[in-house]
Image (tube, rainbow, N blue to C red; front, top):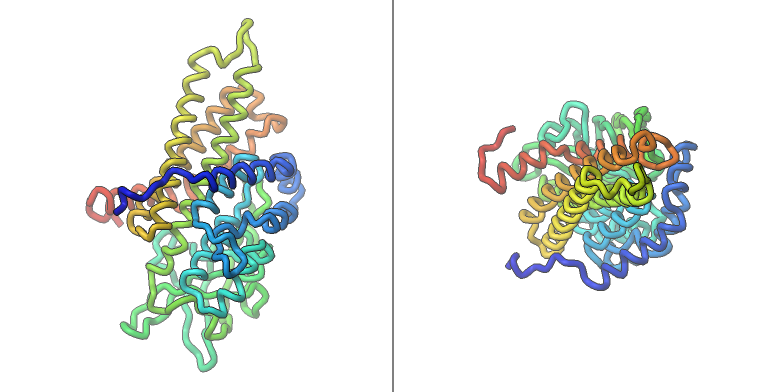
Length: 389
């Protein structure tokens, strides 16, 4: 029964958080910003996190992982973000791709990919978004057709993260169902070096090591075993990865909000005007207290989503994951805004480490699912209102 599923964190997960926080402090915001502004990647951080076992905490033990759940991976994600050195591809590679392959992959696919996800030596991007489909997966036009020796894939994707630093991309396409003859979602592992696969960077105004790309897929030839799972699994298989994605996105946003609040609180204690710290004034203190409340509510909902997912309550987990992502994004945006306001003009000075969060926090309301689509989910499935799209 769902009312018997605990969603408070175990001592083991709390210890994991402390370990990650201590580890992340060796890198921190200065390292992350230096790499991002120089156009470099955070490869050292990723490799070190992999060696420590942090990237593989949710990979099954038989493939070299920690055997934990998505809640453990989300805790790692949050603590890295709270330390000022988030790893965007954690949301994509071990969380989405790793979860889907662990759940639906063949034994050979699991042996090939999961050990690399566990130790951080493999990264995989995830490609679902298309220019004319957006959040509507039913309008995806990337299509796979059967051939005598495999598949031919054609289509295009947009706003795909980290394509330049991975060896393969898990592409969401559509294939004709062997049972019904209708086109249904299907997942294919596509090597980035295969003929017909190309990509172009999208110039973004957001500071970060990971880049965004338009992907072109023109008559890409794939073997039969490029298909992950069943071609008839459809949307259920896809959401096996999208719910963990929302949980991870919520954790990353919560970590960002925590960092912004930490900076604002420290500044409010030490900055004096008219002989007293500005934090003594309720006009400063109350918004920060409100952010603290909002952050902790988002954390609790994220923990509940993870607990439900790990318990196999996937529909309820989807509800909680959407609510967690919504709440965490709102907390991130409002907390960063309040932190900038508390700092006054200093909030826009590079020295104080807040200005780069303005664009990043705003992005949390858009990706990986917009707050409007999260609200659509709640309206339809939680409130029973008519579907609006």
